[in-house]
Picture (cartoon, rainbow, N blue to C red):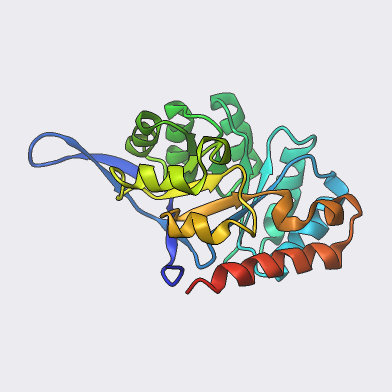
Length: 235
């Protein structure tokens, strides 16, 4: 289940198919061996760099700083040059085109949205930056994929059925990669991947809520390492 890489594709263009219909062509893929995106919301700017280093060092490959975190753009801009090869630093809670432009200007390596806005997807595609687009209903999932999103963020997933909802979506949309976000924990991680999720987005349960609050870097690293090792055990 976990052996294959999943790809967050960057650029996207539309081509006419043989029947005159538009087909999606996603390329410039960024692959993650561990399909977990760590979400940091409300983190203090002076502490972020240390958390990033600890999390990347513990095996996490992608971190999302939410745009509604005070100073988020400065955090990403300052730390983007320090991101190790094979790691990704992106921005989330990108809700509209203005916020997308701000995230791109800060140097975000990928964007994550909580909602579906085709213009946001288009702006990121123009910049060659992958988009993990938020969607909930089947109509939104399909529309986000057609608009060029590299990965569809099913949000909030937990309240609408969690793994069971992912499994239902995978029925008609077996060709669309889905990332479960909202309610994912180490206890239900296996259930999400068994249901067909391609990836998950995880916040406090990945880093450790108390560890973050106490600025305990060794504990943060231990939480991340345990989560990643559990993820890898599904092979």
